[in-house]
Amino acid sequence: MFDFGPFFDNIDLILEGFWATVRLAAAAAVLSFILGTVLASFRVAPIPVLRTFGTAYVNVVRNTPLTLVLLFCSFGLNDVLAMRLSGNSSTSYYWWAVFGLSAYTAAFVCEALRSGINTVPLGQAEAARSIGLTFTQSLRIIVLPQAFRAVIAPLGSVLIAMIKNTTVAAAASYAEAALVMKTILDAPSFTSGAIPLFIGVAVGFMILTLPTGFFFGWLHKRMAVAR
Amino acid sequence: MSKEATVLFDAPGPKARARHRAMTVAALIVFAGLLAAFVWRLADRDQFEGELWSPFLKWEVWEGLILPALWNTLKAAAVASVLALAFGVVFGLARLSDHWWIRVPAGVVVEFFRAIPLLILIFLAFFIPNKISPSIADSQFGTLQRVVVENVLFVFGVEINAGTVTVSAFAAVVFGLVMYNGSVLAEVVRAGVQSIPKGQSEAAYSIGLRKNGVMRLVLLPQAITVMMPAIVSQLVVLLKDTALGFIIAYPELLSAGFNQIPANYHNNKLQAGIVVAIIYIALNMALSRVATALEARSRRSRRTSGKTMGTGTGAPPAPGMSATGTAPGQA
Image (cartoon, rainbow over all chains, first blue to last red; front, top):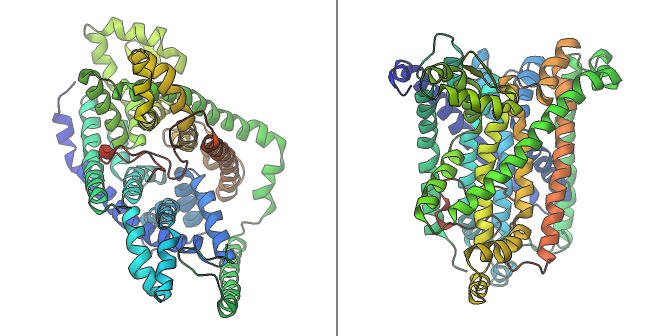
């Protein structure tokens, strides 16, 4: 039962799955950070329309299951509305998975960034203005450096959650590690080695998530604002 | 807010107000343009046809497809919530134990289940017993396996037939939700108890209470008030995650929306998806409201000396980061 032979017979497939996971996670990390920053800037903007939009987006997306978001992207937008992101159909599905995962994660990135800005006391900005710093200067020298340090830990948590959430793309038939595991298990010929397969995939995800967690925890401690 | 100074923006003067008005108009034009483009695309692909939307005005669609699916979603969420809370309390307190041989294994379990995706836990429960049970049935544990399945696990719909165990989709979803959310709740419980000032337990020890009494009479009652908002917002996460049942064909709300209804009504996946999304959002927002209300109440409460754990980012620090042990919302 604990024979790792069948696991290593399928190692090529599994590694290919994890490579797909890493590609999805990396692209979604970049895109969700960009979208989240834009949303956060909406939510703290002095313009009520933008604030309302940001709040509504975050509330709607945070209360929607990720599975639904991804299915809506792949079935609804890609298939029904034929909004293709690429000429190649599987590349188009990949980019919709990236987009759906990023649109979902962006809401959490936005909340993390906003709470980071809120940790900076108003007195800091008032002091910056009173010594004559302009808006850009006060943002660049006073507010953002403090806010950035405060969001390291929450952003790390969001990133790790996002890496784990890449598995949900299996619902949209994106062949990442979890779907590979399901495909292997589904085959009737695969009778022994189920537990080693689970352990292997679990360890694979731990290799992705735990060091990320350690790194962000270390960075958070190192960069903490003494206040 | 726009009338006052914030950290980022000073109180606007006449020039800034004029600029804000111009940007408001520009933003409205951009949003309206995006919306119009989307509606145009919908019309272009004939998505406003009456037959695609009308099923949701018929009672038999609700009675036959949507409400049973909603019931399945709520059933899985309710059973998993109760079990996850029990799991969370047991493992959260175990992690606070004075004995390393309780604390360390409990920590390993909690960190393991938090570090791997929920979906592969669901796969573990759904596929693997079927594969390994025949060989267990042949070993000396065969009788034990049969007794456990026939007397305990059958309530979740787990079946055994000639030594082969079949796990229902419901049981697999519940297993995954309990293990993952239970581990997160264990961290919430631990952080909640640790957030009570040390003076409380010192005072309790000094009047002669033992460990059991300190935890049961002094720390836990205060910690529960502190933890409530974080627990309820984790239950929102749990309710959302029932949608993963779609992948192993558990007949819940999402599969009603993307499989059953489109199969019967002209493949209206987009429309069914929108209706299902509205149901999910309404449910989760109601539950989130409860969490926010609890948070406000707990902050006012004098019944606890701990600091309320916010609903904000929800989960405690991700695995690997919890070395500092700070509770969410305290940073």
